[in-house]
Length: 175
Image 1 (cartoon, rainbow, N blue to C red):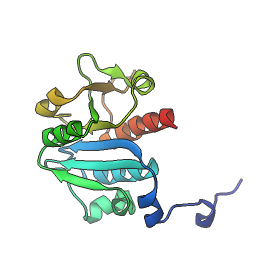
Image 2 (tube, helix red, strand yellow; image 1 turned 120 degrees about the horizontal axis):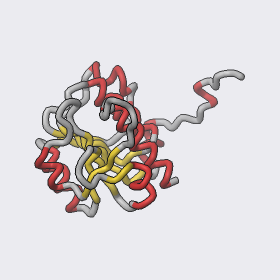
Image 3 (cartoon, helix red, strand yellow; image 1 turned 90 degrees about the horizontal axis):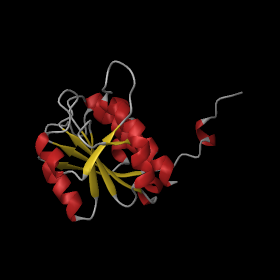
Image 4 (spheres, rainbow, N blue to C red; image 1 turned 180 degrees about the vertical axis):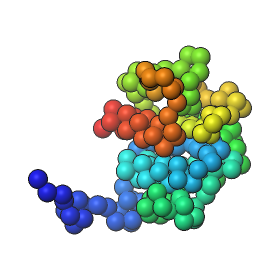
């Protein structure tokens, strides 16, 4: 077995990426502290042709070397916008016909495998702060919650890991 070279991977150019049909999912990042987490979410969004990322509150914004360190150029391909609050972003998305779901352990949250099989159409997923999660105001506006099943002692995941799991499951079930 040998590793494929860059020319064999059929990577899209920046222009080809921008012109590609996107997966109708918007990622909302609510007060994320870590630039590395933000960069990782950009890279994941690029991998799955996610429509856009909304950076909210004090979530760091490109350009910044610490975001670039993990994004590896994805800030140049993935469309992004800034909103003063996640609540503002949720209202904007719902006004455009998106159903918005918080990735959060809440009363009535739907386990991710069940969610992916049940919902289609334009969706947005809100990922919250590394310590406090999705803020209460934005949470109250969401159409529901999605929970990643976990069986260990810890019942939370790093936001970049959670984003990878959620986005993969959503894209996998749409393709």
